[in-house]
Length: 154
Image (tube, rainbow, N blue to C red; front, side, top):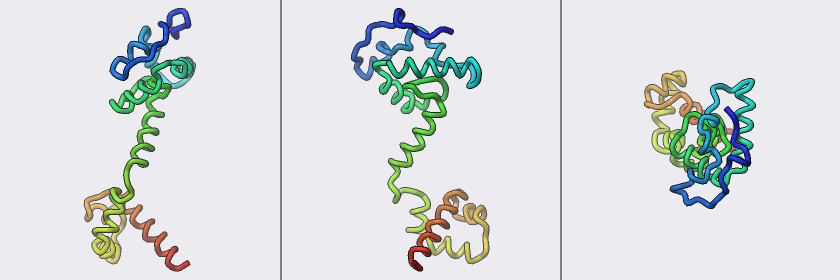
């Protein structure tokens, strides 16, 4: 598979969001943007694809579309699938207000229940099962309470 060259690219235009694909530099050779691996010649292909993406007039629209539609494979908006997943996790973390996080709700609404289970000597996985949540959430509750104790005693 060969990368698009300057002679095969169409003139750049400012595309409306709904027709951004018409102005995309990848439109003539879609297979190039879906490498079969992540090593050797595939890594070279990925680097070339990302380099072309950086010059594309619709790079941001493409990347946003890939994130919005949860594209699992390929290069979109100058990002591969791993980079998109990392970005999506960061976005979710930033957009989630702290008060909507599960561990905050447990501290706010169910602290006596949590403390009672801890007093019984249960492990985090058993507490999580009793409270119908994850071990990660229970560990976040524990860390928050430990930090609060340190702040109070300091």
